[in-house]
Length: 122
Image (cartoon, rainbow, N blue to C red; front, top):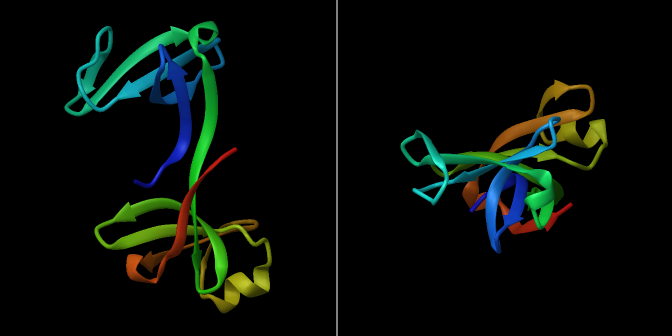
């Protein structure tokens, strides 16, 4: 599973999460869960005070592609959207990456070429 976002531990379970500026945390579940409202099929939400959350952390999935370190930011069928984290523009250009913004380089890479996939907690 490719993850890139917040996770919150609430009542001993981990949920996808989105912290709000209002001191609340939005928790998301893929199926019906007590006290969660259905936003659309396969997506349920509950808003809780940040003080009720046991732990909030950011998780991202990283990998190696063509000898360089990347973060996986998306997926479609057998392709992965990867973002270069090496910070060297000449390397990004040599790899043929798309410049998204200043210092941000991404591309679609075949999943078969991706190596050393792992989750990092930030």
